[in-house]
Image (cartoon, rainbow, N blue to C red):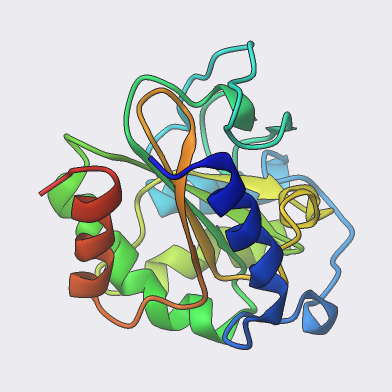
Length: 200
């Protein structure tokens, strides 16, 4: 588990990373929420796993105290209360090129390891229809759940430059590692799972 001082330095340095998508280049799409009737067919077609339940009590050293709506089926998720399982939280957007390139690695790793590690996406500044359609065009298709963050609250709270960003949470809900930028292989992601979450 990384110490608070080391974590603070890691988070502060993320703004310098050039491999993330700049949020200033992302589209802003006002309109219906992901759970509207307009997107009901896309939600059904996406076959996303339900969003996880979370504790109402925030965890010290965990994610910010934010509650975000589920992109598909399931409850809104209190990010600061994600406890009980080691968890990978990935910030993404359908408009983000590096997110598109790494999505297959996240999806294949989720498919192989979902019995031992929880995956949660955080879709930022996105049109719900585009977000729901995104996973179907990834190989293998993305089936792990995501929440929606149209106002990029999580990104701003953690001082991230832009997606992709990936946070690793212990089963106690504390942040143990942050990977800034794109994963370039499933092996790279699996190495971080082994190192920081002890998932092999």
